[in-house]
Image (tube, rainbow, N blue to C red; front, side, top):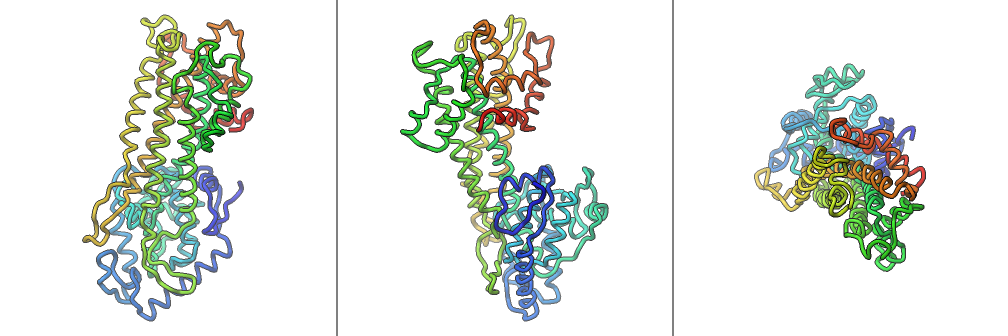
Length: 512
């Protein structure tokens, strides 16, 4: 992907990741330029005629009762940026801030926000030259949009606040100047157009979703390896079983597991070694599948939101001004709560598979998958750590969207808490990535023991062999505790997951 052309209508998740993480350049479609300029003309007419319109010549929120003179209309916009930038906490990661900028630009290009084209172009240049505003992650109620964090995004555009340039945190004005950009003064409605929307919660949640979609495939790979190491029963993944309960996610997971395990002679059939497997193996299609279905639902919602106008008021293409509630985050808050639940379940079932492999009573292999247990602890505490993360995920999966708190003199009396919902989902994704990394590493160890126990007379599956080889190229079999520091080994395995290397190699031989 060489570039992404923004129209306001067709930005998708893959393009978002290309721009925000891979630094693919973005540009504005010509048709969108005309729509932005037409919308701006309507705002200028409103200012000149002194028609009363919220946010253009009135105060904000409950202060909409206060009239603002034509002479003060520009100052009003700068004022809200200075005072609304009241965030707290750690800065949002660079990729999330870049996603915020990209989504905001795309939203403004719908031509219903009344912003000047030059202001949108400045934000685009900041994105393309990698001027990354410093945005504290906390402070948004998710309605009226993400006001506080978006105000921090705008500060460097005015020569205020802070921003990163080439990795260095600088005063906003200096960061802009180093990138060859000049700060601007806002005109009527522009401050409100830039900060009133669901952009930050959507950016955080969208990137978490992208990572979750990759993890849903990693979960199938890890689960297949774990099942194979236990000589699990492949019959539970037969297509005939799933077509009579044809949920898409279940069908896809069963297909993935069959393909990953294709050619394996370690897996068994019903009654060869046992009649049924435990749920964590047997029910992978149903559990992983439920998460896949949820992720697809969330993706549908995210891609609608990426191409939505979420500020207020909206100026229609024929010049009508409508005050509404498109800034309200509830439409994304609930999906991001679902996202956390779906990914948490991938981590929960993974941790239970880990326990089955390290437990000698359940696996028939040495305790904690190490030779000479007792002198060596092997993978004992890696299971503890995975269990701790799985438990943390359960707390983080409590929905944020069922909460609300009144603000703005009771004018804004029902809010979404979508920003917290998206950040929780992001943490659940990170935790689950570590749990699945742990399972992959333990499953590779278990497969080595299994191959030794069976005197290498069986063959690994098409996909599991590749996954095992990729892990072993980075992480060696652990013979004894004295030769390793387990954290460092886990970090090596984590890089295979985070970089996409493991998934990329498996997908060369198996379509997931």
